[in-house]
Image 1 (cartoon, rainbow, N blue to C red):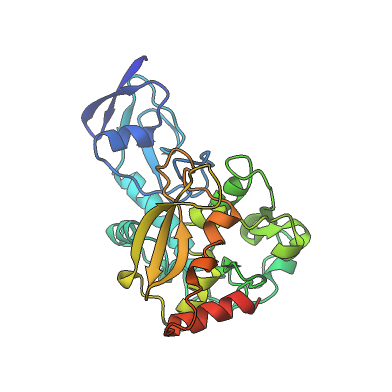
Image 2: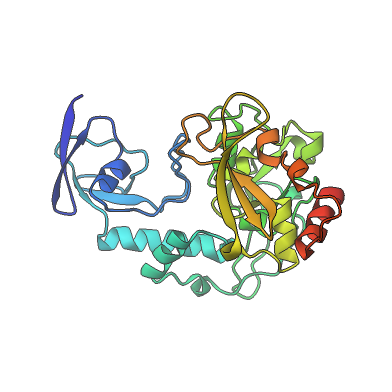
Amino acid sequence: MTEVALVIDGVDVVVNEGVTLLDACRSIAKQQPTLCYLETLAPVNVCRVCVVEVEGSRTLVPSCSRKVEGGMVVQTDSERVRHSRRVVFEMLASSVNLALVDHPTREWMESYNVDPARFGPPAAPTSDRDQRHAGHHGEVVGGAAETVHQPIKVDNSLYVRDYSRCILCYKCVEACGDDAQNTFAIAVAGRGFDARISTEFDVTLPEGACVFCGNCIGVCPTGALMFRSEHELRQADLWEEDRQSVTRTVCSFCGVGCNLELHVQDNRIVKVTSPQDHSVTEGHLCIKGRFGYEYVQELGDLASTPVDVVLRRARSDS
């Protein structure tokens, strides 16, 4: 394979032709922040937090999708790059609830001194976001920052949608589409600030094309899509991730060999994920693999825990 030589932050780098700038950076242990990027999905270049400066380029370029070229001179930590990333994080944080983003993202935000409050206090929540017409913004009152708040959608017993946490990274759309499931149950509706993830005609998930594989949950970086069990346990202040054990096993429903990661708290399975580095699943599962574990929980008359009460409610109240 042809090799390409370039310079990243003053370091000479040689990588294979066709790799991205993000891959080239990682090859020399220079990590870049990402939100919309995932190795198992096609890059869509929407979050813009991974941008880098390429000598001779008029604009900053997204490192997650820009392919390397011979002789490139790249800066990943210039003042221009830092300023751009800071503003992107600030604009996201001023309108979206980022309380559940992962630890590396929080560290990046701290390193850039992100201050979303400079756009003003959050505007009062509204409940009509799904009914708004594209391009028609509400009147700004008192210098407040408009948010993407809308009521949490709880319409089934498997998972919930809290789009007040949605940054429109498109990962869920890609996972539901031709990158994984090919169901196309969700897409982006509206334009500009009024854009949001929606089902066809904004019907509930049970009424739409969703097959409840949960692959959208597996790729969501902000907690906008969440297991019903996790949502209910968080509401009850019983979600204790630091006390959970994660056990890797093989799904027992068929012979494909999908790997599962069982998240266990108080000796109860509270959610199931799949490792993205597994050659069979690449993090994706079907409804049985991701949600079909309740038969393991049938423990008869054994002593129950507070977690059991919440999990029963999550299964029955939909």
